[in-house]
Amino acid sequence: MNTESNPPLFDVMVSPRWADQDSMGHINHVQYFRYLEEARVQWMANTGFGMGGGGELSGMIVAAAGLNFRKEWHHDKPLRVRAWAVHIGNSSFRLLQSLHSEDGSELVAEGEITLVCIDAKHRPTPIADAERALLQQSAVA
Image (tube, rainbow, N blue to C red; front, side):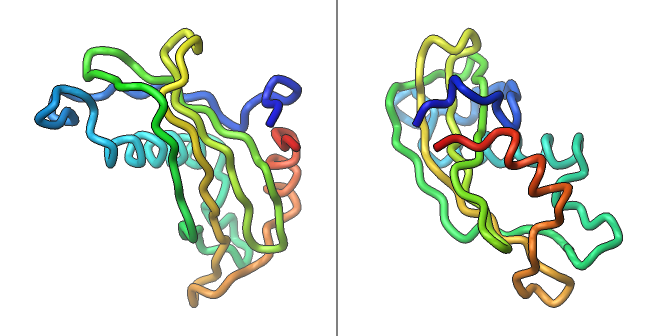
């Protein structure tokens, strides 16, 4: 997918912690999912995306998540987390997420996550028009 054509939905720096390393001295694979979540939550807090806003939307749940690990990483080096929309459905959307070196030159991990918008009863609810427009700004084919 060509991510160069559209700006990312978000571009957030995260700092791996010393305790995130495993016995082999590199960041444990499960920590990458936490970094991605940290970046998504920061994006949602900054934009209000998925935070309700008085409509039917109560929040979002993760329906699927996957990562391909490309390079070892260590606690003393920050990671740049970016995401682009790759599919926008009625109540769900899929993001391409990547973790890179701070300058963007080294790809550390990449994968997709599917998020579903839910109502107060935890049933799927349509993506609001404003949120759909925000996702479409970063959509890649």
